[in-house]
Length: 441
Image 1: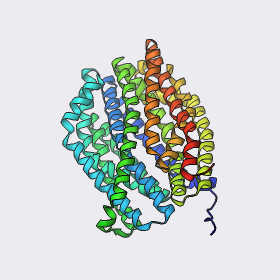
Image 2 (image 1 turned 30 degrees about the horizontal axis):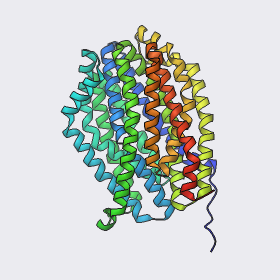
Image 3 (image 1 turned 30 degrees about the vertical axis):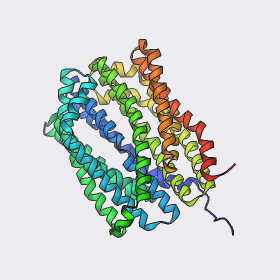
Image 4 (image 1 turned 180 degrees about the vertical axis):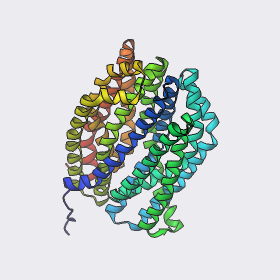
């Protein structure tokens, strides 16, 4: 009996997924840029700090449940590689159920969450008041945002990158347009920025349901025995739990980074938030390639195609290095001008320019951090992801402790060290996991 013949993974395949994902992802940090610019032009550092603090909290809160997108993508790609058509629909419906439960739970817990989270952040009274206003409105978008994670992961998992691109762009463009209208035209202030996010996620959910329904061969009808298959549910629980812990460690780094900036004063917080938008641009850009790694590695995993898995890894990392260099050059050339665009405060502009070199360097170690994240997700090496992320968190905290006397400079060095640790540790562990998974020598 001959081994199955698998098609060779090509650069064209990588970019058929990564290209649309990059375009979609690039519109995501633009939401932060538009919100920061709209609020920043009100010339109130407390309001800018408030939207920055609340946005970081939502980024982190939603990242905590990012397993909804990642596991949906990985399991869908694996089911596609294994030829399990019915299971692909079951994965989507399971995701919707989990998304609804989590989103509803966050809405029910909004008051204690507000109290605990903003006490931990330690911002000034003005910043905290503005941030709470934003939080109490935007939290209502949670069920829809999580359901959108599921739809996007499901579409990319099936290598349907163009519908995923269209859905992501719809959500982000509506968010940006509504933010400008509500904040600048109708004077709704920071509440307007939060309302814009709710409108965007609910509209995206409605569009996503229609798209998913049309793609599903039998709609959303799944036999109960398939939907609640014990083996599938236990695997889903295990993978999601490990990814959630891994993401919590990632969240801890960025919350720590933001909290230290907040305690250093409104100008430091505002400057770091402006620079954070640069990090988001590079991160989401590289995440486009990570999306390709998730889908291609997941599909190769499901098809038991070791060569395809290795080829996907190699292509994603090589192209990632090229794109990282390009992004770094763009930041070096246009970074100062973008800082001036995002804030009218001379103090914030001057302080942000001092730390621009750190942002220019960040995409290079980011290649391996994001690239290996995608590879590990596709193979559902979730336990290893968890353990290596916890180790990277420890390295970040140790670096900051050693350099804490250098203030914001030490904080930025620790953050770059965290990127290096993430990619480096996963890269070192990768060969052994590959041999174990595919029983290769």
